[in-house]
Length: 262
Ligand SMILES: Nc1ncnc2c1ncn2[C@@H]1O[C@H](COP(=O)(O)OP(=O)(O)OP(=O)(O)O)[C@@H](O)[C@H]1O
Image (cartoon, rainbow, N blue to C red; front, side, top):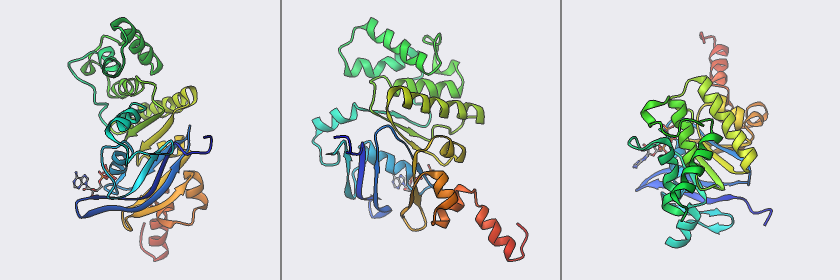
């Protein structure tokens, strides 16, 4: 169905035991969109990502994937759905004892019946998509942090996922490598038509790549606002979100008005 959101979150409350992280989240992510989960430290971004990829059960509410209730799916259905996701964790999470080609080939070995040669060829192709042609036989320790992230991305893309999830992709990268990764995310979205969900608090990335963003407000433990980040910053009526997107400029203005130095 053309109108079915790729991912839909309905009345989701997330908790660790009796500690409620966020209440009553409601939002949709459309196919082909770059969707950002943003907010200050500890607001629940990574926890939300875990719910979206089925690593954590909702305390209340549901997550739908292509209209199917992911939260209520049985083991087999859930496993089938998971194969349609690619996840890039913070450190790139590559196996240090394996070459880049072996790392990228791992999901193909696990989930497909392809021959060793086919796996090797596909791994080489995926590495070339992220600018790592010629690095197939390198080990993770032999390349830079930015290259490791890109290799992790090649592995996340091994099974041609419909949705790519990124947990803080630019963490630990210098600004140029971070920009290069952002450009790559957009390129891959455009060429592969994947839906992309990114957890980040990096403002440069948020403005560069997001179609839509949700702000998790740690103070209220509810979603603060949802929309295009440029719109939210320039015309949004939620001051906390605007302040976050303006790096605290509104706080500084308030301080100045009160006659105190900024
Ligand atoms: N396994 C856990 N058990 C109990 N509490 C947890 C657990 N994981 C996270 N929390 C708590 O849940 C809240 C949200 O954590 P989460 O890691 O999702 O935030 P975040 O927005 O991703 O933070 P950051 O930007 O610092 O990575 C925090 O208060 C954290 O201490």
